[in-house]
Amino acid sequence: MLGKIHSIETFGTVDGPGIRFVIFMQGCHLQCKYCHNRDTWNLNSGNVIEMEDLLKQILKYQNYIKPSGGGITVTGGEPLLQTKFLIELFTKLKDLDFHTAIDTSRDVYP
Image (tube, rainbow, N blue to C red; front, side, top):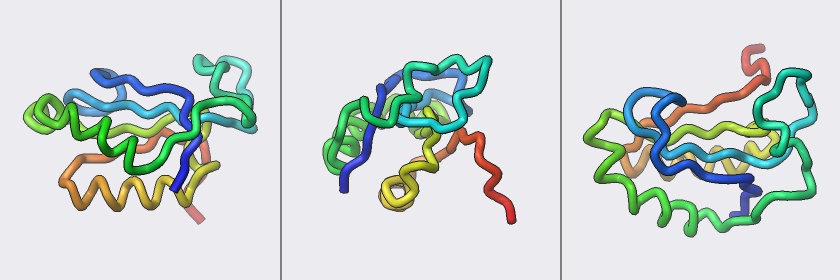
């Protein structure tokens, strides 16, 4: 499965507990006035990445992430514009025993 990624931070410390591998997804329709990630808005830019390639990158850092009580944070842009990709990613990450977090502006409650 393919995802559209803006960028990756391999040693984040402000997007959840512990050391985080932070994935910035590409695309956002909200375009909030005070957004600090404006370069993630455009739906037609970013890097297309295979799920398996992203997982390989994450696994390179697991010896730092897991002992710190950290995990993987997906942010954006708006991550929920790529829901199918996120479901598959989070399923695989849970199978690998990673803590996961999502940073979204969408109301996910009914």
